Image (cartoon, rainbow over the protein chains, first blue to last red):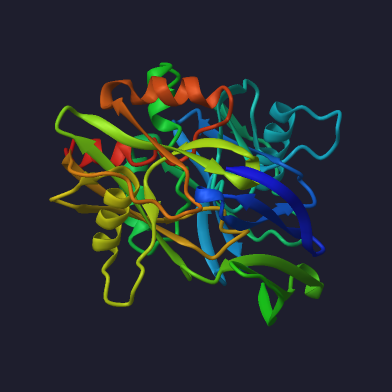
Length: 183
Length: 183
């Protein structure tokens, strides 16, 4: 496959749509449409945090596209060029949940829906987080913090998934944390 | 949060962008932009298939947005109203990899990037899949099949994630398959 041209075909306040012209099989021409955020550009940070009581800190967050709540790991992105991704993960956790992470370990860098968006997701793990403050969410964020005992996390996701209201990555770091003996 | 209005603000060949006008905190107005595919509309199917030798069937697939390859589970969507999602998962596995699934179990229904797109992902598990044919991919799909021993899957994802070329859901069904004693 060979990319001939990339054009921006829509510019929104937050989202842009691009189209790539490609040469696909048998020398045929094809096109591929995808999106990019204005900000954050291409990397997001996601936090898997455990309290001292071994509870996972999750968020029930209103998502306008679905007009419904979904359950997700705390996430966001670096706000300045100086902020490291670990610092951003720590700040987002604190802002969105009130929990303070002292020790942070990078776990995994992956992609999600890579046919739709050029976005890398960087996962961090924080043990022993402590509730130190109030949420200070952005105006567009409507978040309720949910703590789920680590030992019940799989059952919790199975139960929530019956109504498809849980994000698919809540369980994806578990096998890695176990493999690395971090939990 | 209250949604006042939903408008389509861009229509592409494959992707549409919508904008919702919202009332957010303190009666302030906000907007949220998101995308929907024309087809499939709002549900995708994803297959976690194991060969008789307990190898996971993965795909190395060229993704135009990244101009690079990523490693993913076989996926797609129902092509007709008559096709069930289990049938679609079976067909996509066969077309994209040449492996035939005889027994299929639904595992999980979740969302991915729910702030960006209204899309549900339905995961299936198929044990003992057998290679019966050649790939018959769509013209836009450039796929290499990779088989990874189940026991090495976590290490494989850790290794691949160093270059962020792996999708975040490859490990997410593992804890559920273990919990349900399916693997």
